[in-house]
Image (cartoon, rainbow over all chains, first blue to last red; front, top):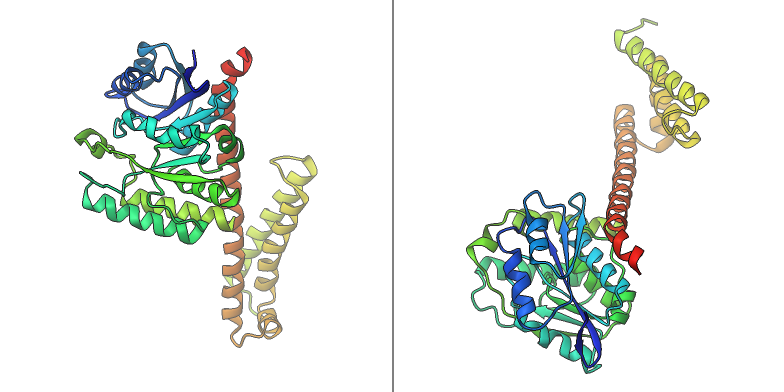
Length: 232
Length: 115
């Protein structure tokens, strides 16, 4: 059953990888504020993430048989939402760091017809964000701007909303964390109207402790992949 | 002209590699395309030629405008290796994309079926 705001079908895409501890909570939080159309994409988790999501039930749960990365999983979720007739697609992380209460702020400019993409930004009010994350993100923004031509305040945020039109136009090739920057490139190429919206981030011991998150080393890999995609 | 051990070794390896390439191409095995065979013959044939006639490197060095014959060979080798690595990385990237696309199609099968 579609979540109906101004007769729009709104789908929430949550890519997950090894999030068995928190996935049920994340799903319930999103549901509790009234968004029933969830698409959870398990990106080949080695733990019981898929089973835990299934236990929560009542949503679309997709599974990558092998791990392909956050970008690939997000794209799978967006493709699924398009197949299901979504008018607006929201993507958010599966580790609980994003507050579902921000979804309404993300979708409102699209509902109002003011833009096609809304980018959640952690850096407008970076309360509780560790200093090295802030530095990392500024570096990411600078590299994204230099390589892809568009300055945004949080190029690495996964909390975003897309109109149907934007979801049809944006075609990414990036499988891993460079996906977030590639979306910025697509916005620039297709001249999609976008808006940045401050979001809350909940950095917990759990989310900070995950090894597959975008750390300094993974950051270098992301930059390398961004450059490689340009020259290849 | 005295024959050194390295010359014999390089010629034997080159002959084996070219023979394998020709044999695979003739049998249509191992995805051996004409381009791959051509590159194999150029690389290994070139090494065998230089091992047989080391003085060719002087001609080669003057042809590409370098003073030292060894420098010319090393530089050419580096360029060749760089090109091969670039091609390999491109192929890996393409394969990665294909794997992601297959994985995606497989996971979306149910939704597409019910559409």
